Length: 306
Image (cartoon, rainbow, N blue to C red; front, side, top):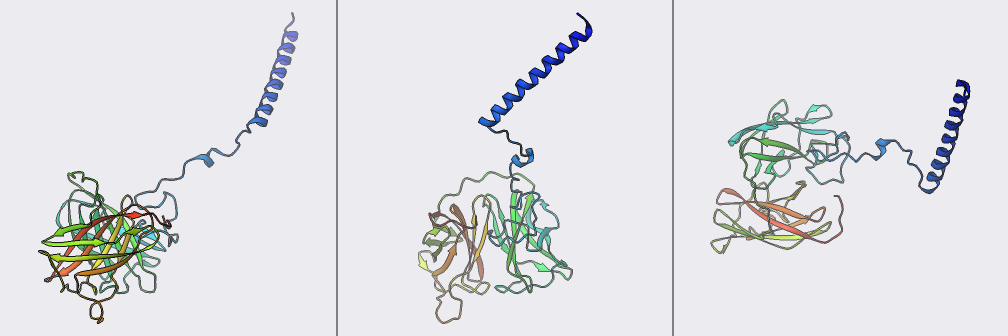
């Protein structure tokens, strides 16, 4: 057989095989169409980063629907820690700035007697502090925190002059050993420095809930609570998991002729979703501010904002 004849036969076989393969693909496509979208269209969505926003997403986009504290930047403002890693110890210095559209922000509205409230909490809820930093002329805030080893979250709660109130959050890594705290269980009564604080009422996802916190000492109702930041109590609620932040102030105010100075302090709280929430009540008595830590789950309700 000549070489040309062999080549012709091989070519004819290849053409026939291609035709059979084409028919098979056409039949398969009719039964189960081939996905022709780019592979990138099937990649999983970006996971949230430490600041609660997806990697690569615009941090400066308006996120009014999100609970506070999940993002380090929002609506043109950014919380920038001078050093996101600190060593443990008492009175550790912390510096930060709020960067705005025109650089470091230096003008703030006074809210509850302060231009900025800084909350620091360890992610396992074993540490909590509410402090009020000092603002420098260059827009740098400075304060001191008592820190134990572990992962912390700091929240800057403020209103830039001419802007809307914001709460920005940032992670703070503290070196040193950190014992894992046990899971937080529902806690409706707690004791701090001889004071017993009890909460009545239930949180409901997406609904305004009325909570009443009662302060007693040695079994006796405390009826002479002292004003702290213009109120008889301040309540911070943090959602377990992502530490979504709510700062709640009580009904009434000192000196209004209606609001009693204890033992009960009433709050209207609307949490954004179902789950467990860590509650921290700041109250002042005998010239000392104390913080009571309680834990409440939610009941079922209309979920939104999550």
